[in-house]
Length: 240
Image 1 (cartoon, rainbow, N blue to C red):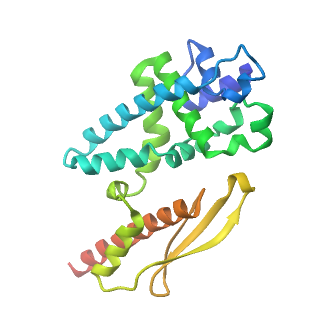
Image 2: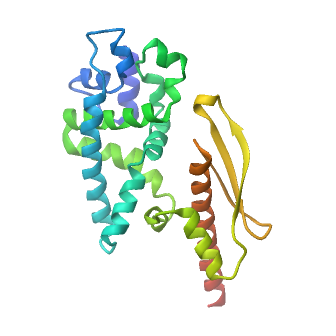
């Protein structure tokens, strides 16, 4: 990375590296190493970042939700640490633009590949941990991963399957079951994005986008659940 790129990443994550080589390594894919034998890749940092992420997510969830069961905590941590969630965090940071890739990965759209982006997030987390300790790593996780995720109701994150939870909600109230429809597909084959709409009883309940149809359907179901719960709460308040 050149100095301008490094400074841009540091500004995004609000951390100036004492050891800038850690930042360079965190954003270096193994395909780049084949071109530059002296460059270390981010695989070991990714391994460490996975462990640090598990610790920090567990710490956050236990602190914020003392009444949750072990099952709820585990499901939520798994969702927050999923490749999909990490990829979205990387996209918010625009990390794909800063990845150092070999020619092969560059040609096949490596900057947009979900696995590479998720791995880069974990590697960058490890680099922050090694350079600034747990406080720096904690700020990074909470700002770029946890806070955006909890813009939705916390209980939806603890659900094992949003689609199943939505069907159970509708069944319990005698309503028609939900159906899903792909509204739009965008992007090249290696980085497709799907916009999915969910409806029940000729009423659109929610829509969302994802890197796969399954991911988009789950996200749309989560939006629908949130909407239905808000409507139920409003109706309860009106009735007094």
